[in-house]
Amino acid sequence: MTNINILPHHYITNEIDSTIKSCLNCDDPHLHFTAKPCEDTFKQTKYLIFSAIIDFLPAELDQFRCHNCGFSAFYRNGFTPTHFIKMPAVNSNYQTVISARSARIRCRNCNSTCSAKTSLISSGCQISNLLKAKIATRLRSDVSAKTIAFEEGVSPSSVNRTLDSTRCEFRNNFNFLPLHLCFDEFRGTNKNYHFICLDDDNHVIQTILPNRFKKTISDYFMRFPASVRGLVRTVCCDLNSYYVDLVKELFPNAKIIIDRFHLVQMLNRAVNSMRTDMMNQFEHNSKDYKLFKHYWKLFLKRYDALECTHQFYDRTQKSWFTAEQIVNHGLELADTDFHRAYWDYQCLLEAINNPSAAKLKIFKQRILDTKDKCADSSYKVTKADKVLLTFFNYLEPVLTALDPRYCHYTNGPLEGINRKIKQIQRTAYGYRNFEHFKARIYLQTYLGKDTRSSMKIA
Ligand SMILES: [Zn+2]
Image (cartoon, rainbow, N blue to C red; front, side, top):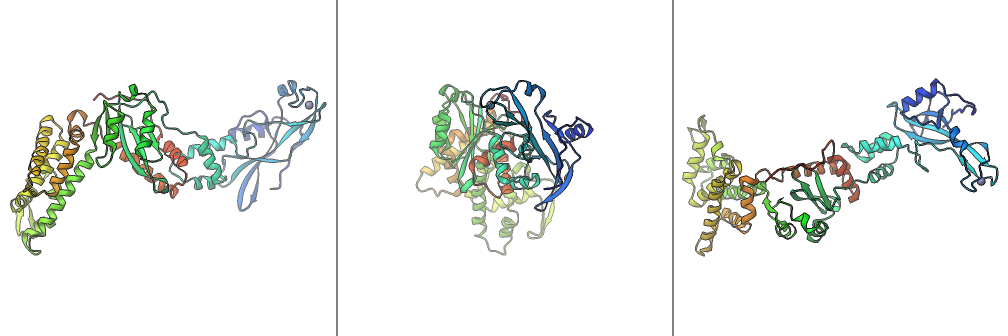
């Protein structure tokens, strides 16, 4: 970089100085801008260069003590060589830098030198604190570290160092736990699964652990005193995992809520699979086959939500039907196994859609009946029965999920955050460093979020 002219050190605080300072958003009295900015190109990057000198304040000189010997007599000894300070860009076409020289003074006693410092940069740093703050702000939005590095004219490692310096930690107060928790996992660095725990009331992440091993989760929660863990009221989690045992161990007073989505999904798949099995028993060009094939969606819909007034002409059946009539017709053709599976499924949908104690009781009875039937060795267990038997094994958590008192607590917010985490990974083309990944999740999920705990009474 050339064209840098520095005025002699007898400057005055002039108009240029105050204008440039307001442009660059720095009001450090040590800095004195001495000339208009100039342009330069270096390694195909255009720079806007502000020349400045960094000088001691009069008060600092009055109280000067040599850092080496403590002597107070000194004389001015010129300036240090030019060094550059990277600033946030003031013009989008240029990288902005300050080319600065610091005033130097020399001790009369021991001859050691000392140069003036500015609050704009940390010691030994080229990147100004203002630029670091800008990078930290940009890390909160969905852009890759490399893009930020390119646009701000720093290296990707500098961006990662800024990320480290934000010291992001999820809640690390071990005297407090939210009343309602959500457990889940997601795939992250090195194809590992990471455990994530969320506060269900205000959707703030409680923690993210590097893996989902029982020991890791247990070790984390065991750091909370038993009295704090005893206050947790509900925990939402998936059915097909060991969380149920773990929660019973860690939170003795908590109710476990199995995620409703997974309950419906399991039974939905069983019913759908039974429908195809039954469908394949018919001739492939028969009316009945086409009924089950064409209207598969209607058999998975909630019965009450089926259209029952508007008729449409169905070419495969060569007749006029409403959606409800189609399902009823299908159920007439179906065997008793499918019949029962269908109504088990409808019962679950109804209990979730309009939760009430009565509907809960009906569904519980259906599970218990299935259990009794399956105890008989001559009974042929269907796919839906297998699902209901699984529900029986986790009877209490499943029934809690359908309980109207607990219907506000779901894993929904956590699934939403998992979607966001996936987006963070995609933008970065994956993370290698778990700590960086965690810090980025922290920054991006806390945008404008109120982290104070609110309470919902269960
Ligand atoms: Zn000295």
